[in-house]
Length: 310
Image (cartoon, rainbow, N blue to C red):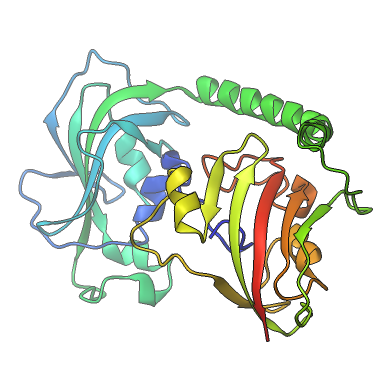
């Protein structure tokens, strides 16, 4: 749920995936057809294109990646080329050594000892059938289709940072325009939070330690819905998920920590109240990118109905 500070990013940069994946899976298999580097990496090229651009340290590989456990596929993006790894010569993890061997157009399989991965993760994250010292392997099948150079990555980073700087600078004006366009007369708090009460209830009031249930819909200033407990709003915003129940969200105030703007906005409001919160990014996620929709320095708008206070 986006409003919770503990929410993870839906997707981390794919360039880091291979290193993370080494901490998650293991597999058995023979080494038929594999060669071995001095550092202990097993590799096999099923297709080589030595005339293609060769991967350099710091480059990001674009292509298809499949991770196997024996004959079982643990992960694959086959048929959908994307950024799958960044080439760094980490000779302990070893996969980076293999990536640096590749050229655009190559298809290769790399294998490394599962025992190495086990050094870096909680034992509970290793597969149940992983057994130390038995020679189990991690297998990565890679089809390399393109390369994003280290220089291109650096330029992307600079462009992104510049864009985020512009978002940060324009945020006050964006909020002011929203307030004006929606004829909001409520005054902001000292922190810049707008609390617009549309209907005031007369039940018990929200306070720290009380269990409350709320219906909510979260939007960006442009109206884009990113989350909702209301099925009709979720469908309208194309965020409907048939796997989740659409019902009021229940939580304990002050214990189940939500974003600061939400906490401040509902505090002291009586049961039955319907309100809207316009939350500056400083009281939401600030410079963090929480999803493809919630970018850094995104003000948020929440429509909230306080269903019950206990």
